[in-house]
Amino acid sequence: MAELGEKAMMADMKPDDFDTINEYINYLQDDVTIDREKFDNLDEKDLLARSSIGASITLKGINEKLDTVVTPDFLAVVAQQGVESKEIIETIKVYKEKQLETGDYGLYIKDELSVSESGKHADALVAAYQRVEPDLSVEQIEEKVMRLKS
Image 1 (cartoon, rainbow, N blue to C red):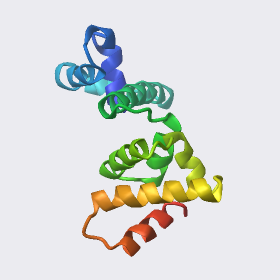
Image 2 (cartoon, rainbow, N blue to C red; image 1 turned 90 degrees about the vertical axis):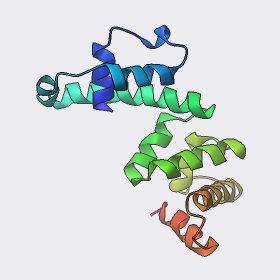
Image 3 (cartoon, rainbow, N blue to C red; image 1 turned 45 degrees about the vertical axis):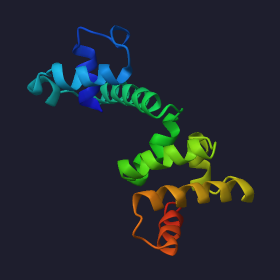
């Protein structure tokens, strides 16, 4: 994220110069080179600023690509949990299909939803993980989903 943010700060072009945010991200990744020595010597505050910029760009790209709204809170929670990217993407897709808000994911994890709402999120997560790991049994998937709360 920090490198993407650094590239965005250095780039001659901005997101408005592209038809999609993903084209802009590709431009940053492929055509913008950072000064590695300067970047490696940035202090924590500067790295955090660049990480925030990179995360914002990435979030816009995810929202555009999946045609949904993924909240920063959702990304923060899954990042803390160490959830793999393929699991994150499937979760986002299933949440969209089931008309659930990604912003409620953290509430689900903290057991702060009603029983009914919690059940909807559990079902959605089971469906997402079944897509990611179709060889696992339903019981194994349910156990994985329950471990998300611990």
